[in-house]
Structure formats: structure tokens, C-alpha cells
Length: 203
Picture 1: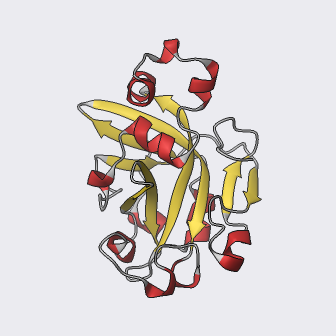
Picture 2: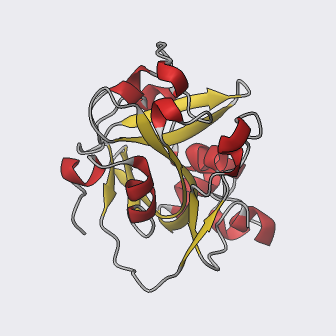
């Protein structure tokens, strides 16, 4: 499959969040390939979005990657223990990003299972199998996405996104998750997911 280029990411967050559904996130590590289909995303629209880290033009070392060029990774930590992986979009100095909330495992299942649960994929319970990558923190642990990858070029060879082969799905639009602090922005319908996919984190 073809790797997505810079132009794909150089659009507003809402457009990219929907377009990323069905694409394949790939992590190359130690000569091994781990791949998973993107099934759930959230758009964060930058300085006017009260749920975004860059709301009001906030600019700290933590969020600096959002102000950079489109097509780079923005990885941040929550609760001091869980990482969240985002795709930087739009233009340089326009700090928008797309949070990846859910993935459907495709390749490297053993590596993912060992990273998440310390056991082989065939040894996982049904709930562990479903819980492998159905949430932003879970998928980061499964694919080994941590703060060391913050600012990595998604047009490179370490971490990138490929065009997906599947297009036969319906998209559900919903409110974002975990942004109750964001005033009216908590109700914006800026979360998108593939209908009936079992790896969606919240329905």
C-alpha cells in the first residue's frame, strides 16, 4: 500500500480526521512491522477549540509539535502513565491535530499482545483481544508509541500511515470523549468512527 504524503495531512483537522478512517498505521521496529487499521479518530481544531491543548494560542514545550509542519507525530502523556498519539495537520503555526482513538490490529499481533499483556496473542482472553487497541492509551502501549516519538516525521520510515484497502464502511459522527471541561466544545460532533467495528473505544 502507498504511504500517505505530506499533502494528505495539510488540511484542516476535521477533514483529515474523517479521511484517516480505514488507513493503516505502521510502526517499523527492530526489523519487524506492526500495522493496524485506523477505526476511530477525534479532531482538535486548535486555537478556537477549547478542548485543544493549543486553545487560545497556548504554546508550551509540550504542545510545540502541534505548531510545526503537517504530517508529524504529537505524542503526549495523560495521568502520568498513558500516552496518546496524534497526527499534526493543517499548516505550520496553525496548531491542529487528530487524535487516534481506536485501531484494528492487522500485523504484528504477537508483538502487540506481548507489549500490552505480556502473553502471546493466542493466549489472550476474548476481552483482552478486544481491548488490545480499542483506546488511545491502549493502542500506544500495543504499538510502542511513547514520548520518544513526539515530533517524528510520519512521512519517514519509522512510523507512518498507508492508504487502506477497505472503503466499504459507514462513518459514525459523535461527540468527543473526556473533554467535559471544554465548555460548549464538549458537545462538538468531532469524533468519527467506523460503524460496527469492534475496536471502537466508545459507542
